[in-house]
Amino acid sequence: MNPLSLIVVPYNRVGHLLSESTRIKELESAITTVREQHKKTTEYGMEHYTRIYNVGLYLLLFEYDIAILKNDALFSIRKWKKKFVARQMAIQLYEASHDIPNLLGKEFRNSLSKIQLSDSELIEFNSITKEFNNFKNSHREILNKLRNHVGAHRSKDAAKQLDIIDEVSLIQLMEYTGEFYEPLGELISFMTKMFLKMADWRNLAHHYKK
Image (cartoon, rainbow, N blue to C red; front, top):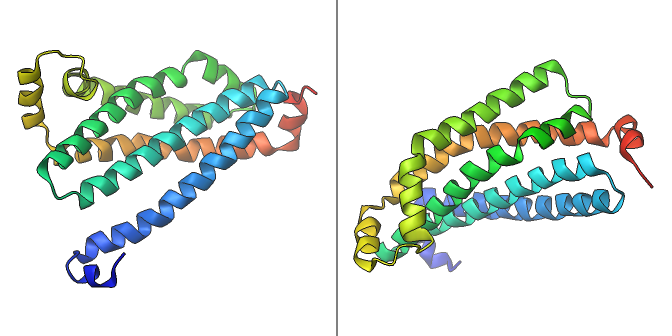
């Protein structure tokens, strides 16, 4: 960044840019690490490990996409660029609000049971899945409309698309994203604990196939 630009960019935006730059690098590193573990466990036939790593990788990819969109939202000047970012956020939230509960379904629960999930951890997991379902049910209508008519361009009525674009509020989508991050943060913390369990030699010995 040109040093002179720091004069005109608000301090909070500069702080965000610096912190997010570090965060994005950390996410890229985490994605690489989990991807490698996912690949290894697939090669070794460790079905339950592979499934759990797949969920972790999905969460990291989602968080990475949102981090990039947040940067675009904060530094976009043109009105239409802000609307574009809002639409992309709507798509991400729509897909994740449907995909994550599906990923955390019966098969995932079965895999968790194979790494010695405690009763308290099961209660924690159930609470997290409930929060995701509550988010999806609360915002289903608006996210469906944005995703189907505007984001995915499924509607062939161009005037309808423009009307909905005019209704898009980037601030509103940022608020939805913040709300979604509450259970997401809890799930990421939960998954971190699961990864530590998976690294325990007793679990590794039980699941290692080759």
